Length: 258
Image (cartoon, rainbow, N blue to C red; front, side, top):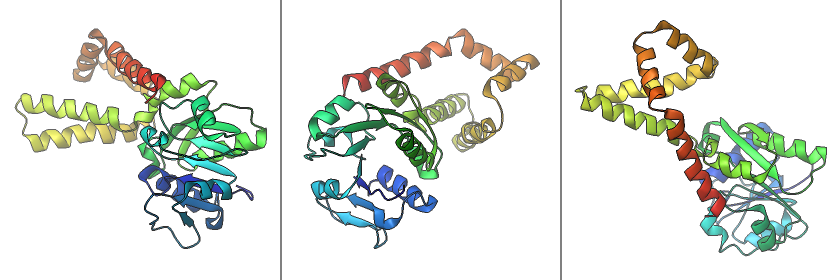
């Protein structure tokens, strides 16, 4: 990150900490250029990472400030970030509101998900102001430290993707729950149902990393067997509409603000 200092407000929470550790491990930033703050003033980071209990002090010592806090905590946050660049990881808090509340010169909104823990997050990000190519590359590299990342063309994309990629493992977990419930209802012992569903969700997810998902569907449908019958049933019941409504409901919450 060259010679710039990054301060993470909420940097000892699960999200902030996972990002901080990835940035350090990848060499993106050196420990002496990283500051974190939390209310308790306690941390298990190494001694070179400076821990602060005063958010304003962190802002003043940082070139870039990252807000890794919950949306409801933002209402209580009192910082003056004039002259700073702020990266927000909060869902449902518009860039304009962040700029108005903090005085930040430029606000970037990003939406990583829980897969930052294993550095497999997809992180869409949006800059509410113009970035030079150097700074655009810096933000992109920052989020690539925890997985893949893409700059999106407008802020509405961030709100929609908060309900899609921002959900992280939530949708696969819901599928797991449904598969287990239906198997148990059909007479499969619970422990076996759980292992079977786990294989579908976890094992299947790993397989998708190596193959085109749409090609898999086409190939399995062509066999006209057991899997094809199950897939056709879901298609007949318009699973895309069910997923679409779920995404829209989530996106509506993000657009209204949290």
